[in-house]
Image (tube, rainbow, N blue to C red; front, top):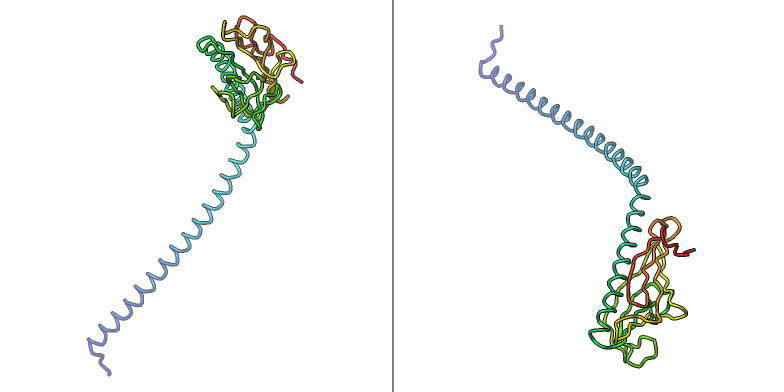
Length: 212
C-alpha cells in the first residue's frame, strides 16, 4: 500500500484551489465584459431613440421658432424707427440745425427702399445725400431685416427732413413701413410722421400699409 505524504496532499489541494480561484476570476471577468458590452449596446439604442425624438420635436417646433424670430425682428425695427425719428425731432431743435433721416444700403446712399441702415445726419452741403467726408453723422442704426423689407414713403424723396427752427418735418409727412414676407404678415405696420412732428405706430389691421 502506497502512502502519500501529507505535504504532497496539501500542495495538491492548494494547487487545485488556486486553479479554481483563477477560473472563477476569469469567469467573473468574462461576465462583466459581457454585461459591459450589453450595456454599451443599450446606450447606443437609447441615444438613437433620443436623437430621433429630438429631431421630431425640432421639426414640429421650427415654424413656431421662426414666427417668434420674425416677431422679435419686427419689434426691434419698430423701436429703432420710433427712437430715431423722436431723436431727430429733439436734436434738430436743440442744435438749431436741419437734420435728415434716411434708409440706406451697403454703400451708405439714401434710398427709400433700402433697409440695411437707418441714418440720422447733418447735411452740411445740403445735397440731400450722406457724404462721409462732409456730413456729420449723429446716428446709424443697423436694420438688416431677414423676414421683411422696409420702405420710406415721403413723396418722391429718399429722406425725411427735420427743420432746426421748429424741430418739425414740415412738408415731409409720410411713413416708413415694415413689410414682412407673406408667412409673417401679422407683424406688418407703419411708423408715420406728420408735419407737426407727431410720430405714431400704426399696425396693418387699423391702417393698411399697402405692402405686396
